Amino acid sequence: MRKSVLIAVAAVSLLGACGQPKGQATNNAVAENVPAAAEGSNELIPMTALASKNETLKVMHERHEGMEQIGKSSKVIRRSLESASPDVAQIQKAAATIADLASKSNGWFPAGTGPEAGKTGAKPEIWQNQADFSAKDHAFVKAAQAFNSTAASGNVDAIKSGFADLGKTCKACHDKYRSDMHH
Picture 1: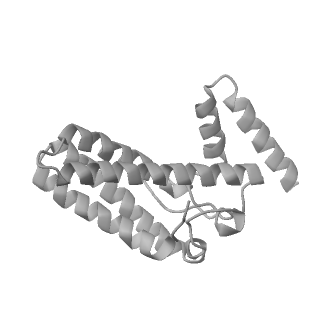
Picture 2 (picture 1 turned 120 degrees about the horizontal axis):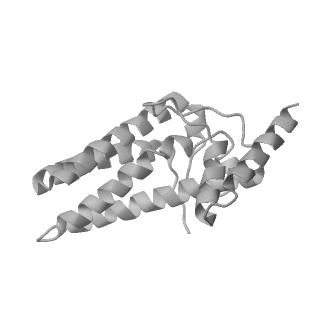
């Protein structure tokens, strides 16, 4: 019974992707296999497993790419803030990217997408301590939203302070739940 339900979900996902640009179809197929949290919530939704190894690898890839982009955007912001004349427009663009990706982060960690599934910087402790991990992810999302608003103000001193606050939420999670990956 469960297998037929999973096959039906996969078929609907594939049919729903027809006619969409390639990247959008892939993202929708992944999103449909990762349940969203309740409206206004950023709670991690526990899952027993994704339907297939391919879906698991897609989610892991999306997570990796999202985190890489957050890291690159953070570097852009840091470099700009360290310069003699910070580029506020560049900071605002990077802050918006971080806020957008942060809003998706609660769907990046379904069960079965840890080290047992392949190369990842995500430690098994994420799934062993879901409540704590979810709280740290929620704090990151809130800080990313607040930083995006602060960046939009254009006040460089406030941006520096907001960026430090955002960095603290990244560090709190990475210290406990991320292992170093050597490429």
